[in-house]
Image (cartoon, rainbow, N blue to C red; front, side, top):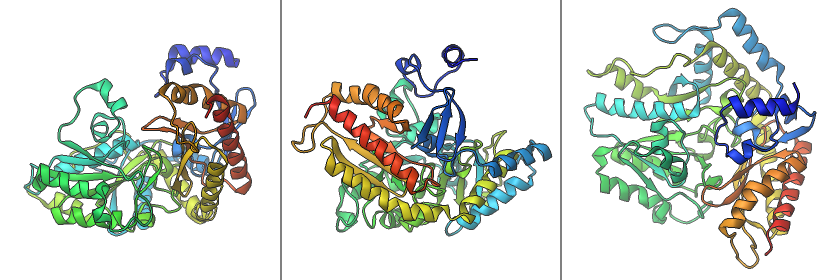
Length: 454
């Protein structure tokens, strides 16, 4: 079947995710194969996957060892549940994760996606406090422009109005505080910054005895790879301890190497009460997500008069094939020192992006760390002119998509609070691949400047 026929069938039968109709009506690529940091389409064109799929293909495409692990498991035990029983791949994956996670984050509850992982953390927080005689603790605090998922509970914690509005009323008792935009590195005492002080202000407004959890990403994706200022996470940990609130580190993007560490702890130095993960745990080779929770909290829930069971589960949770893939993926990541590649190449990416900022009037800011960056765009950084709304739409819907096709480098245009270009290559990308990526970014910025006058 040729590409035209495949596109026609896709338009008629395949429901696209977060895709505008005009995009679905265009000549979108159909990918049929992956090799390392590249995707190959039906026409045989090779695209550099500069977004690692959706921030997930950390070990790159076409890994025979990971595929073999899936095949071996399918031929041995294709399915068994974790409801009153267990199986070796889920046990092995949970044990490996516990070995790599900080502190007493020793128990993993497996699900199938990042949204489900966040949903699990929400449900655990609520049931935990009910089991401890504090049923009034149901409220959640998250940060402006934060994305925490698409299921109704996770969407409630998400602070992106555009993707919440179509669904009407969501969970009550969700409050937002300012994110850390504009604050990174040494900004003086963190307690004096409104992006931190707002947490305690909201806690006191709501009543500390009613707040269950704070959700935050080590590096916030929404609003463009926001790295918190020095001292922010230790102060947040202390604040949660002060008021008996659970701290949830949403690491669906950030864990398993994206920041150069297995978990956000490597950047923040803080052990949260729960960690949510997904994407990089399998490098996208199979669906898997999970919540890692401190052993103390599990014990307290199980031993309470109203406990004994975490009343949550899913048919595919801890699926044998997905967890076998996770073990193969994480083991390879560890044994091949992939995190070392991120730690060595990440600063070079940042330096190169800063050089591009200096060379292009359309770049307002560069943010991020590891293999996770955002380039914020504007009409003219020299005069300070921002895009008009029409110019922003033109850049996001016309200029950048055409640039991706022309350069054969896939990135992501982002409109969450600003006009941005998101960069998140596979963690195995070497200097040559990264150089190709950066040349692609340079060409994209040239295209933006040609399309929008200063």
